[in-house]
Amino acid sequence: MRSFGFLSFGHYGPVPGSRVRTAGDMLKQTIELAEGADEIGVNGAYVRVHHFARQAASPIPLLTAMAARTKRIEVGTGVIDMRYENPLYLAEEAAALDLISDGRLAFGVSRGSPETALRGYEAFGYTGSEDPRGADMARDKFELFLRAIEGDTLVDSDPQMAPPGRLAIEPQSPGLRDRIWWGAGSRDTAVNAGRMGVNLMSSTLVTEATGEPLGILQRKQIDDYREAYKAAGHTGKPRVSVSRSVFPIITEQDELYFGLRGGGPRSEAQDQIGVIDGFRSTFGRTYADTPDRLIEQLKADEAVMAADTLMLTIPNQLGPEYNLHILESFAKHVAPALGWKPNTEGPAVGDAV
Image (tube, rainbow, N blue to C red; front, top):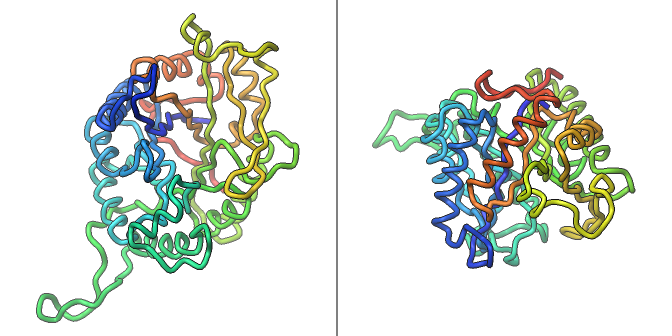
C-alpha cells in the first residue's frame, strides 16, 4: 500500500444524528471533505454512485467541483454503473473532467451493484438486455466507451458540414485510458479487467465464500488479474485498489462511535458471509482499534498489502469535520507504517507486471 483515499457513499436524509440532511448538504460537504483531505496529504477522494436512492448519483458535477477546488488529490468514482450510461456522452464527460483535473481522475466503472429499483436502467431508456442483471449491456457499453476515449472514429461526417471521413468524440484527454478502472467483485471479472488492460478496483466484498478471509480471497483475485494483464501483452503499471472500513480509536468520541460493542476484544472481529445479487459472498470486517493494533491487523491483510491503493469507506453522515479527523488519524498514526506516501510526493503509481 502506497496511497489511500476516502470512499463516500454519499448518504443523506432526515435521519436522527445525521449531519447530512439534504442532497445539497451531501454535495457541499463532499467538496469540503476533498479540500481538507488534499491538505492532509490524502491521495484520493472517491464517491459511490447509486440511482433511485438518497445517495450520490450523478458524479461528474461533484467530481468537477472537487477537482477545481483541490490541487493534488486524485478524484474518482467507485463505481459508475454502466447500465445507466450513454457511453459516448460519458466519454466526453470523462475527458473534460480529466482535463480540468490535470490528469487526476480515477474513473471507476462496472456493471454496478444491486439497485433499489428493479431494472432501473430501463427507465433511463436503456433496454434490450438479455441478462436479468444487465451484465451484457454493461460490457457492450464499456467496450464502446473505451473505443471513444482511445480516439476511434465512430461516426461518418456530414459532407455539408465537414470533409469526408469519420469522426471521433471530442474532447480527447491524452492518457485517460490509463486512468480507467473496472470494479470487480469476482475473480472472473478481475481477469477480464486484466485482459482489457484497465486498472482493478476491488471492494469490501467478493462473490465467493470458501471460509477463507476476505484478504486472502482478494489477494487471489489480484494475482489472477495481474497474470491476465501480463498474458494479454499489456506492459504498463496497472493500479489496484481495495476498500476497507478502518477507524483508529484515539479519542473518547472514536470509542463512542466505533469502540467495543457486544463484548469480546476488537481483534476478534471477523468477516461475514451473506448473499448479494444471488451469490454467497464474503464481506469484509470493520477494523476499529488502537493505531498499533490496526497496523498489525492491516499488515496481515494480504489484499491491503498487495494493492497500491486503500480506499477507506467513511461514515459521511457524521459530517466533514469528524471524517477529516478519521483521515488525519489514519495518516498520522497508521498509514506510514504500511508504506504510505502523501500526495505531496507525487501521484500514486501501480506496480510493473
